[in-house]
Length: 156
Image 1 (cartoon, one colour):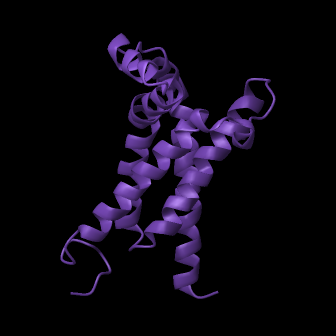
Image 2 (cartoon, rainbow, N blue to C red; image 1 turned 135 degrees about the vertical axis):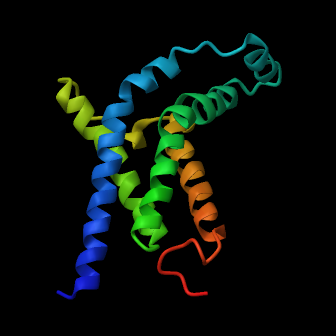
């Protein structure tokens, strides 16, 4: 195996491990963010327009998972992209896989519960996935927008 392929696989493994550790460390913060009471006026507006589930979904995406897991994950993804000389989409996929593994498999098994399956959740309960997609999309956009002079491995 050549050195470049080994380095790529090593960085992919590092991204998976970083995502898994991040998710396990952030579980208490997710619980605290989930306990934050939303302003009544926000949900009142959504309820008055028969969009209560959309209000819950947006609260989860932006506040509960957005501030607790997605924001730190996006920052760590930017660091990984910078250190790994690109491959942003692969690093994002590996980090996302690590996060999902920790939250849906490792954490429930460590606490003696059944594994969770995001496929069994309603669309408005998919806040984690949506917030990670949003954060990783923003991180990849920022990484692409960085000038070539500050991106390692980029050609001017």
